[in-house]
Length: 302
Image (cartoon, rainbow, N blue to C red; front, side):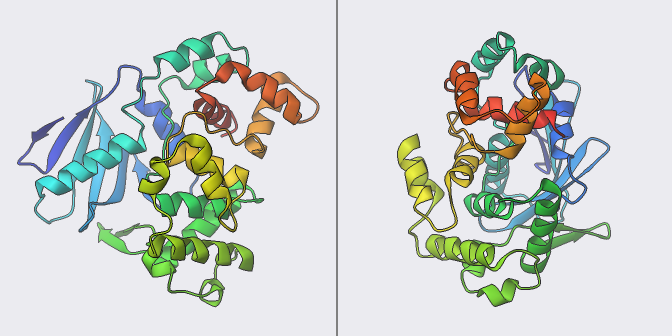
């Protein structure tokens, strides 16, 4: 990483196997995405630097680097730049060596086609624990299109925004804000009352310090999974979704995921979705890479 243009713009070197188009293809899968905008290969989004929200733009150059530019008017402090770098590296999972995954996937008949189609795709994360938990709960037992609609309603009602060039760029609501609400406050959002209760309950756990990303990361995979499943509203699917996309456990495996089942059904040419026994057998080859295998199979459906 190096600075250019008086600290308002800097570059992040990318792994050799990173492909920006593959990642933009995933990020652009929904027109209802409200946390960032993609236009002409450039991502515009708000990133929290702890003390302040900053509006940035990201694009890749021909030298396999990400160009990151602060586009709001405030001076850039070194600590803010470091936090933006940390977020981007975590968002794109840039510090993980994917060579072992690619070697395994090349020999796997199920993963071979997704690998060829989406080589260079990283497991795009949700670095904020509260956002990841909310997204997991919002997506329970509904299709992706409706889940995005609910998230957009939730963000635009309770989140903050930075306006630039006549557009609003949103921040995800904070757990401290949501912890003060009741289900009645979420009534305008077309989610179930139960989901409203789950989200508020999680916000309260995080607000009083019982639940945090730091505490979960200090656990091993099984401890973290059990700790999440104990929370009202979080079952094995939601727990593994969060373990996969926020806590970055490579062995996370949402085996009950409908999208995963449909992708395997499509690739295998099955007449019906695979059984749990079939899924377990197929995943035996994915040891230590279940999360990436799942992510690449999801990508087949978009």
